[in-house]
Length: 253
Ligand SMILES: Nc1ncnc2c1ncn2[C@@H]1O[C@H](COP(=O)(O)OP(=O)(O)OP(=O)(O)O)[C@@H](O)[C@H]1O
Ligand SMILES: [Mg+2]
Image 1 (cartoon, helix red, strand yellow):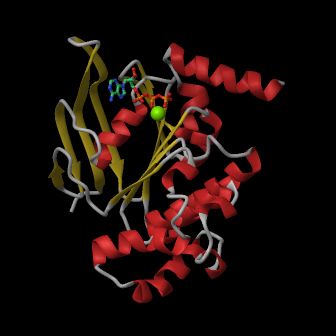
Image 2: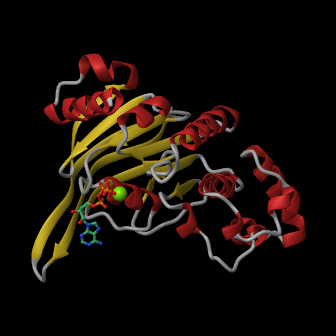
């Protein structure tokens, strides 16, 4: 068994825009994610981060390249319970008319054919794992804060015991103090459940906090790959330095 959980080999993606113009959103992307590791992906808006995430979880089709997950090639639009995705805006992940119990039950019903009654202990445990409790079960999404909702989306992602969670800007819409709590929660779950993450963000400080490695993307390409601790001392690409300087500027204010 290999120590790599996810191998992304030469992934490219083109979109056809304006009738017949081709937009190369991803160009020969290569990433290796080890079991239990978190790799952070940073880069400016439009550089292709979400497109890559969507290809990995199987909601977008790649143009070329290969994805190997858990020693098996995964292809096209295929969804596995072992790869889950969490999105930026927690509210958009919910149906406003669906109680939390039903939102949490959905993946258990789909993947394990469990009845609602059978699911309740698992749902409760998963909610406790993210710092909530069973009082959430009968409530609706609007009764929670953004941070609490993001905890619930995490609870739903972990309830089916995935191996990889792809996080796309999941703390961007939250207050700084809530961001910190979510990062701590993810780090705890990473250890307790032997999870791996791809953690996409534009805030270098946030991404560095949780990631062991950092991949910097620029216009559809990976321009730099560094161990997280070497970010400040070994970054070579001008765009990485620009990102580092903007963190510095914000901290100065
Ligand atoms: N379905 C689509 N059809 C056409 N073009 C698309 C489509 N999805 C993404 N793109 C284009 O591909 C490029 C990459 O988009 P993507 O959403 O991956 O960027 P991103 O790095 O996630 O940006 P952000 O930080 O703003 O979320 C952009 O130029 C975008 O306009
Ligand atoms: Mg995006």
